[in-house]
Length: 367
Image (cartoon, rainbow, N blue to C red):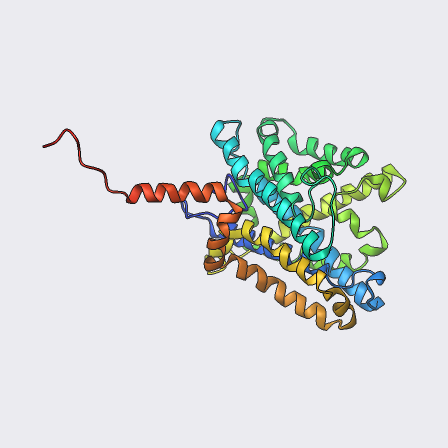
């Protein structure tokens, strides 16, 4: 299905020419998602059993990545959602490409955790569990799209909503993240080809490299300023800081850091079409299936091994995580997993292919 309707979804080649830059950006971002989730297997806190050096280095890299890679993904999601309207076709696509996978995989992940890890859940489906929050957020962001597209000062309004949401948001459909990350989605709605062209210049690439280096250095000291939990946009202010004004300042600082890091990333994304670009249509497959491997490693006790074998564990995870993303996006794999990610679309496409191959019957009026 077209990326404009399902920016994470695997799809057959549409009639219009795909933009290799967007495919490169999408595949790179979902690979970073897998990497970030895999880094949670490393000792990020002293309670994980690692040394102080291990936790400092792991948290440094982790905070650097989480400061901007999800905001960047949300911006791309917003940009590719610009054509969404309250039409029958668009709403049906929203149900089949976002709501249905959410219902299926929220249940499958819960079952997997229960059977393999002995974990039980409450408020299943109403409270998205890792990593299903993004589909829940995307569903509601899409429903807001026609409203924000026509709203003057939309980005400013979204920023205000994000700042205020930290006072009241809760876990129902992970609305804390829906509203907390809303500015990035709305910014994506506002972006147009002229904006992207500015980020694709050679000068912008050098600025992007410089900005990422600066963010990387600053991330070394981020643990002294705020808890990593802030980077998830999922907790209320009162759970993180008793001073609401200071909490809003932290939230605003993180929004700015996410914006800078996102634009810096976009500036360094390669523009040419390569084998990597062809994987950009399978990002939803990667997103929905990589969690089974990460959880499986956790249930198998990898965290304990990682704490005892650092830095080997960090090197190993940092190599295997991107390899897992590439494997899941590899066409022989992703094409077979698509039927679980998009069962309705898969059935519809197969039915159409069979219908096109069926020769027409004889005309009863002839002879």
